[in-house]
Image (cartoon, rainbow, N blue to C red; front, side):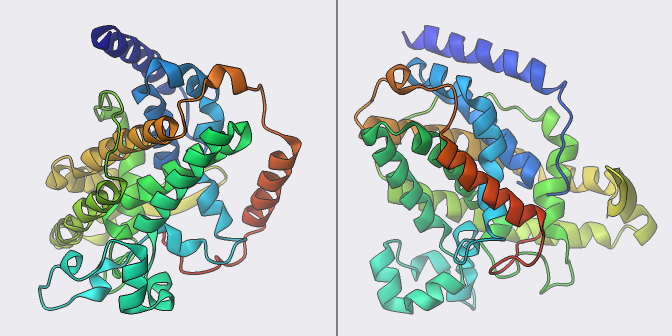
Length: 336
C-alpha cells in the first residue's frame, strides 16, 4: 500500500512538474506571490489518496488564493502581524529568544501583554489557529471553508519558514541592507526554483502541533545571520552596476538584483532557500492531513462541489478590489 501510494504521488508530481515548467509567472515582484503559490500547489502532491483527488481537482483555487492573506493586509486591521514574529525583540546580548518566549499564547500574553505580542507578530500562534479552523471545516463538511482555510494556511506556513519573517531587521533596514527581504524570498525563488528538488515525500500526522510550528519558526530564525551576513559579504565584492540590473515587468522596467549577484548569493547560501521551501511544502501537506484526520476523516468526494459559493466569491472580490486600489497596508509592511 505504501509503495503504491508513493508511486501514485510521484507520477502525479512528475505530471505537475512537466506542466508547471510551461507556465509563465504572472506575478509582480510580489516566498513573494510566486513562491507562495508554488508551495500550495506542490503540497497537494504530498497528500494520501483519500485527500488527493479533492485537492487536485481544486489545485487552481489553492494556488491562486495562496496570496489572499497578503492582499488582505490592505483591507483588514490586524492582518499584518499574522505573517511574522520579531522573536529577537524579546532577547538581547546573545540570549536565545526561544528560551524566554513562552510557546503558549496565554503565557506569552501574561508575560509581555497582548499589545506587545501583536506589535511584534503572531505567526506561530496564527498557524495553529488556522489549523483549528480547517479542522472544524472538515468536521462541518463545509466545502467553502475547507478550500479557503487550506489555501490561507499555506500562506502562513510559508511565512513561518522564511528567516526574515522572524526578526526585527526584516528588510535589512537596521544594517543598511534594505531590499534583502524581497531578494531572498522573491528574486532568488523566481530565478532558481525550477532547479530545486521538490519531491519531499508524503504528508504525515502531526502529533504535537505547538512544537511542530515553533520548530519551523526556530529553524527559520537560526538562519537569519547567514541570510544577512552572506549578502553583506557579497556586496563588498560587487560594484553597484554589477549588483543590480534592470528587468522588464509587464509594461514597467524595475531595478532589481542582477542574475549574476543572485546566483553568487544562492551559491553562498548552499541550498538554504530550497530547504526552506521544501520544509514549507511538506509542513503544509502534513498540516492539511492532520486537520483532516482530526476533523473525522470526512469523505471529501461526498462534499465536493464544482465551485465555491457566491457569498465567498463576493468576499474574495472585495479583498481583491482593496488590493488593486493600492493604498497603505494596515500595519507593518514586509517588503517583497
